[in-house]
Image (cartoon, rainbow, N blue to C red; front, side):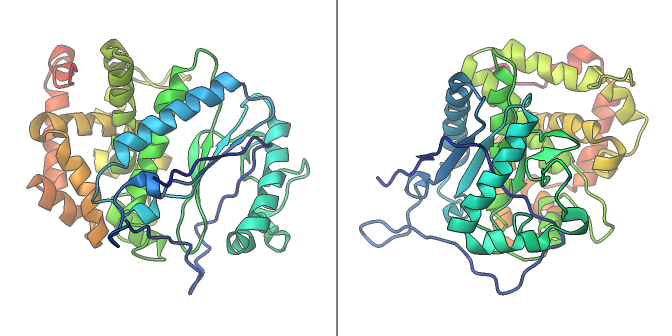
Length: 365
């Protein structure tokens, strides 16, 4: 078994890319592994290439916990033989110390050096390239590039670059958490879920808008981004799988309850459920209008679908994106009903039932 796991203990570095950069005829760094019999391997371990970069002040405990849930996520998400395994790796994981802004700046420099030495094309089209550091990509006075930093602080957890258009790697930026650190466990699952989603379709087009229309993140060319179908499953399964792994369903129930009945904020806003029922349809909620509603109610929509159809159809949906089918048609094909109709029925369920009945649709094991 060709198991690749490159653990690099250096100052954290990485690179993010503008949605506006759309290189044509770019070199693709794609490797298809074959077995001894000459068949394409369907074992993710044969493709596995992960580089873990850490800030100097990140603890070993944090790294160990991160590694544990990266490996857990890989087993849960990358074991389906239908996957495009050549689209999953390499993954660069950048473990930040959320209390050390200067370390994040230093790591941006280190990572840019790494890209320049190992992935020249990615370096050339990125913020790392000094020739690109103008206007919105200009280096800040404090030396930060906005790769692992934002608004004068280390960046939060995110998939901050994707293996597409000839770029080398996914960049998973992992924010540190206070110890004990359950959140780093389920946040890791959440971000790895996005790699699973993206790996099915990133090779279908160089047009970001076209890919987002397949994934359900955009509709047409209206310029808006809708989080419910991309983020809802990542939220739901991060809570569910973490609860199953630690054998604590009180955690899952509490997180899902908070995601509907609390405001999920620090500014005294109305609970999520009220903002949802008094706001736009779930599929019309954008990142700009109320992202928390999209994320949290999106997770509840997944719970509603799973209660009716089981868990497998959602994964069939993402595998089916490999064909290039648009979100609306894919949802209808997999679930047998238009997504707007399903959202309307879900909304009626939330609006017309008490908390006990709503909570009853959640799995307990």
